[in-house]
Image (cartoon, rainbow, N blue to C red):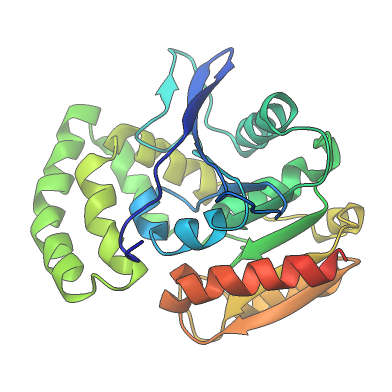
Length: 275
């Protein structure tokens, strides 16, 4: 299967909550695959395209549930819905309870969604056998300038999309082999009002409670990248040190965290970590 192609999705499942309808795509493992089922929670606003190298590599040996959080274009949010960290963590908790079969499974979560996993961990039932956190945050680097977006009516937010799409398209063409090329895909399909509200959520987030990490007792791999301006490797290392069974892996580049090699690294680590 070419690296740029996703495997066929075998099932799409909806998670229904009081104020939201969320989507998860199921990629079954290959015939004879014996790896643990994986709940994959992508980072803020990303699409499957951003993980087009990772999902096939994981799905070759492990059934994968690709779970999309509230700010994604696929979500359906009812009037009065909330986009809080607590509600998004509860979404993940309910999805695991409803969709993950009894037995061993793992979680792979990136960026902001890694924070959600840590918030939800104590309530995950069944608990995961292992966790991989790719470039997790303590405080998300949302600039104060996003507060200016409060002044704009939702319909005017389309102006930002139209202004940014040409530059994003050029970035996509130049960096198609890297995750940043996927920003064009995100920007072209995103609900700008949802993204704005989500930015406010993370801008006001007080930060991850590091003391709570003592509850995450399963083997945990934290993947950081030295020098990545958007994802602090210092924060990732601090999180790894506070996890009772934490290990740290320094990836060579941001792009590497979205490659087949990274996925194979995760699979090999999971097999040995829980053996």
